[in-house]
Length: 68
Image (cartoon, rainbow, N blue to C red; front, side):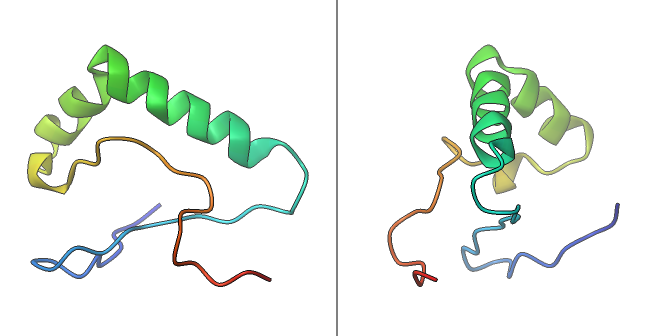
Protein backbone atom coordinates (compact mmCIF):
# COMPACT_ATOMS: atom_id res chain seq x y z
CA UNK A 1 0.00 0.00 0.00
CA UNK A 2 1.15 3.50 -0.65
CA UNK A 3 0.62 6.67 -2.59
CA UNK A 4 0.86 6.80 -6.36
CA UNK A 5 1.36 10.12 -8.16
CA UNK A 6 -1.47 10.21 -10.68
CA UNK A 7 -0.18 13.32 -12.43
CA UNK A 8 -2.40 15.91 -10.74
CA UNK A 9 -3.63 18.43 -11.83
CA UNK A 10 -3.65 16.79 -15.26
CA UNK A 11 -5.74 13.65 -15.79
CA UNK A 12 -3.80 10.45 -15.33
CA UNK A 13 -5.53 7.10 -15.24
CA UNK A 14 -4.20 4.64 -12.68
CA UNK A 15 -4.16 0.94 -13.46
CA UNK A 16 -3.10 -2.41 -12.16
CA UNK A 17 -2.11 -5.54 -13.99
CA UNK A 18 -2.74 -9.21 -13.44
CA UNK A 19 -1.67 -12.37 -15.17
CA UNK A 20 -3.59 -12.59 -18.43
CA UNK A 21 -6.63 -14.85 -18.33
CA UNK A 22 -6.75 -15.44 -14.57
CA UNK A 23 -10.15 -13.74 -14.12
CA UNK A 24 -8.98 -11.34 -11.43
CA UNK A 25 -9.16 -8.24 -13.64
CA UNK A 26 -12.81 -8.87 -14.53
CA UNK A 27 -13.70 -9.51 -10.88
CA UNK A 28 -11.85 -6.39 -9.67
CA UNK A 29 -13.53 -4.26 -12.33
CA UNK A 30 -16.97 -5.57 -11.36
CA UNK A 31 -16.26 -4.96 -7.67
CA UNK A 32 -15.07 -1.39 -8.25
CA UNK A 33 -18.04 -0.59 -10.49
CA UNK A 34 -20.36 -1.92 -7.77
CA UNK A 35 -18.69 0.38 -5.21
CA UNK A 36 -19.06 3.31 -7.61
CA UNK A 37 -22.76 2.60 -8.24
CA UNK A 38 -23.73 2.09 -4.60
CA UNK A 39 -21.87 5.19 -3.35
CA UNK A 40 -19.24 3.44 -1.25
CA UNK A 41 -16.46 4.52 -3.61
CA UNK A 42 -17.44 8.17 -3.20
CA UNK A 43 -17.53 7.84 0.60
CA UNK A 44 -14.04 6.32 0.60
CA UNK A 45 -12.68 9.13 -1.57
CA UNK A 46 -14.41 11.74 0.63
CA UNK A 47 -12.85 10.20 3.74
CA UNK A 48 -9.37 10.68 2.28
CA UNK A 49 -10.04 14.07 0.69
CA UNK A 50 -9.76 12.64 -2.82
CA UNK A 51 -13.21 13.37 -4.25
CA UNK A 52 -11.67 15.29 -7.15
CA UNK A 53 -9.86 12.09 -8.20
CA UNK A 54 -13.08 10.10 -8.74
CA UNK A 55 -13.71 8.14 -11.90
CA UNK A 56 -17.17 7.51 -13.35
CA UNK A 57 -16.51 3.84 -14.11
CA UNK A 58 -13.76 1.25 -14.09
CA UNK A 59 -12.62 0.19 -17.55
CA UNK A 60 -10.89 -2.96 -18.69
CA UNK A 61 -8.25 -2.39 -21.37
CA UNK A 62 -9.46 1.10 -22.36
CA UNK A 63 -8.76 2.47 -25.82
CA UNK A 64 -5.32 3.98 -26.25
CA UNK A 65 -3.38 1.34 -24.34
CA UNK A 66 -0.75 -0.56 -26.28
CA UNK A 67 -1.66 -4.15 -27.11
CA UNK A 68 0.82 -6.76 -25.92
